[in-house]
Length: 260
Image (tube, rainbow, N blue to C red; front, side, top):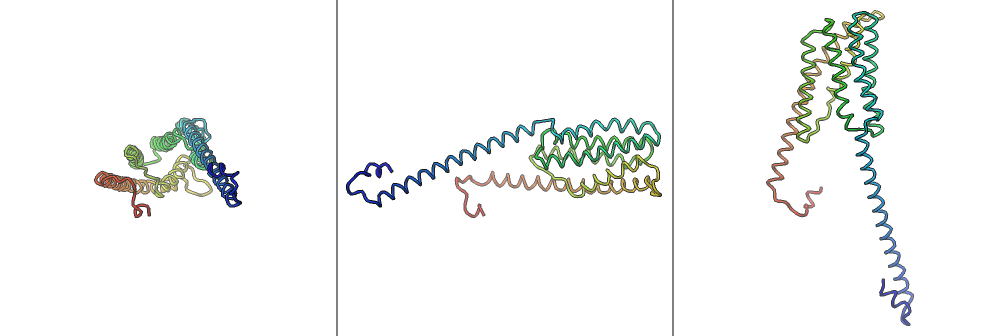
């Protein structure tokens, strides 16, 4: 473009040369605008990444506070159940129901409002286990559930938690299966029925709770088997890919077939 500008006053300079200068100027401005837009976009993406990283380290988010509330409700449920009276059984049932509702809303808010945090990933599964395990142990002391069912359910939770820890150390993510969600749903319905115990409107609440807890046990054992199978399947795939990557020579540019 500098050449055109230097020859702009030459006697043989025509209107074609002028058009070329204008075209070159437009192209230069267009490139500059694109460069500025790209820098602005990169800056916005960097700021968003920094904001997301900061958000994951914030404790006082609504989902985390709901999870904390669920943990704090556990001692009240245990205390109410230890009074061995119908009134306090009702109170313990209400506490369990409220805690179960917070379990739904903390996950919903974390996903909907993009408030997933490190604290939530740690506390949410722990809060669920605190609530369910405490209720089962108290029901066992009240002779409302069989000790074999409680033992199997709690051992299953320990096994799956340990498996998830190993998977995380291996860089693997095992999503919750549909059966695991059904297991949680049946437990969240069965346990308050067993705490309440008394018949209501002719409905055998206690017998229904026992049936649902047994169904929950069967689903729990089945979902645990799925977790184990998915873990070893994902681990084999990962190690096979790693072995293949180590055996192949590194190439500076991928082939077009690899990009399909």
